[in-house]
Image (tube, rainbow, N blue to C red; front, side):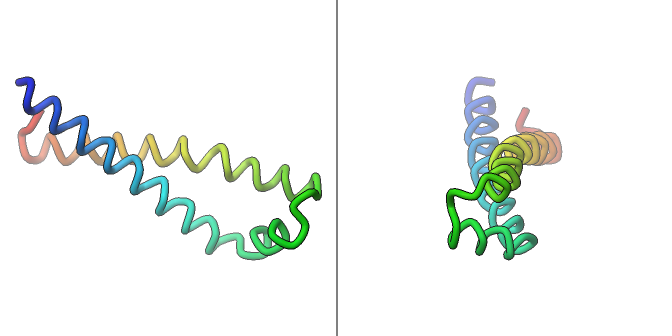
Length: 80
């Protein structure tokens, strides 16, 4: 029981980190103009406001997606 819980936690951590990285890459592909504007003018308030929305929502979505995938994988293989 203890080993399966540790496997679940490890799987969940890996999936959370990888899904957050993937979501950041996807957001940079979906909003290339925003990322270019941010690099050229990092102090613009409007650009920072748009960027902050992405910066705060992507990690939350990454954690949720990673946890969901970890639960699905563990249920499928009977780990938990």
